[in-house]
Length: 257
Image (cartoon, rainbow, N blue to C red; front, side):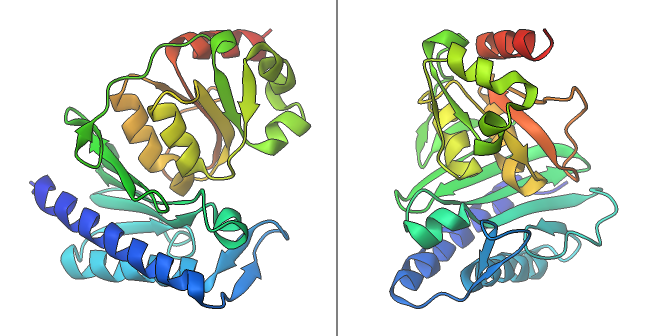
């Protein structure tokens, strides 16, 4: 049986050490490259922080399997045993252009079961963490479940293509909401839903974008679903919606109308 307190303490220490490395990079020249398109960026810091996490995980838990955004994801065949999903810098465009509104995320699974999730708001030095049956915290303060807002009574976070391309009728969904907000970082978007600043967030996400946030959101009673109705698998990419239960009901009515 894994001593979860041990891994919890280690991950928190690693993430705050990574934060100091990232902040120090603000005064250096970044090596910036593109991946799938000109807006899909990766920097030397993304790779450095991911390697930092992976090296520490392998040292402390040599049998662990790891899915990282920048490496080690293609060889994975399953998520059996101790399985960690890491996103070293989520919101790389914001990191490069703004030096703000980006996060670092780690999710911990054991034999496909969610155990612990971590989202570190780098700029604000706030770590959102928790897991099944232990609650969700911002640093040392336990979070209350957000208010169960209806779609019309709150703001909706969304990925830009969802609105521009009217995927799943999200232009109508956006008009029904009080407004739409776009932050360019899944981690920051999940934090906004966890804290009740927005009633939901929808975007096309990879596992490293949603794994940690899903664990935290579900512990707070929020709904996390794949829009196409399929199960969310930590090895797959989906259009993912996290929202209050009341908003989820209305959004699904519009999607399936």
